[in-house]
Image (cartoon, rainbow, N blue to C red; front, top):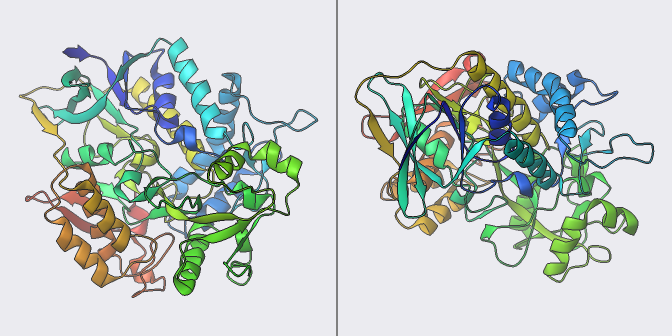
Length: 503
């Protein structure tokens, strides 16, 4: 089957839906969806300088969490445009929680200096954001194809000219003048993640294969508090950071607080710091989890604010009202990705990226809590605006088809990345991972695993969510971004850019 569109948007999470919605009135759009991505699973909410909050303060917290590695121009776009995107989402019918006076309820999460995270359904924010955007896209008449993107089409002139989509057992071709990758992160490249199984780096692998650059792939964020279910593989339930924002504290198995002497903000320190503290505690005590003690939070607050967490805990036989919750870190978010400018353009003409798949520098070395949905809204709209104003010209020349390869032993790839490129890393382990991944095939899991390891072994310092036990300090000589492209043999080659030249 062969179709055509002005623009194909691949991915139907917050970023993809926002881009498609912004383009629907002016362009012929086709949305490719292999599932709803990570958006419906997001619990915390949307961080935005709404009401009496100051965008400057939000930017300050974002840059601190990002370990001084954020692109300040993109951060400024995020915090200044965010409140308007939130207001538009509310106008579309998104139902956020409100206080008794009718104002938006706002909560506190790690890394924030004030209550600025708006939420829906207590801890079901992502599901409500997705519902509102999906409904709006349907009402706008956007055509949708259910399937998985398995290839890009590149014209003889070097422009992206379309996409190949696997629908059931067939592969169809969609000709287009631009393709927007909103395919999410790389969660399924690890044994345990908060992401669904469909999130495995397909878009990132396709972009790299098409000649695009990746940036900052070593910065993989682990959420400190995934629910420990006894099975440490697959998608794990999230225990939102907002539980700690309401007063819950982390304790070791003896009941001693973990974060008190680690950081001035204690349990509300940035995620990388909390995740490392938990990992160190687990390593010290030889245990598989720690405790999150929420028993100080009033019962009515838990029932109102955290119904999803409460239900998840009860499914494994834990009552968070009367006993602590077993938690452990799990892969959560890729802070790098496909290198883009502020409007989502990659260095391949006609190819754009947005959301977690994109590495626009807004998160730096570590994402601030609840900035991910905001990123999807803001930069989804920026991509749409750019393509509304300037749709790439018709491409020419004999096209070539760039398709995803096959992963050999996917579970082995996940195990390698988990063991050697998790929260704690060192040069010897990363070299072992590089060697073992040589025979892992050329599918998306192997491709993104190699890029993470190649960047992590190159960066010989520690910052944000990249921590090298053999180089435990931040070294200003490494105040530079790592850019990856494929070499002539199809392997990731790393080069360095000065910090100011990140995007």
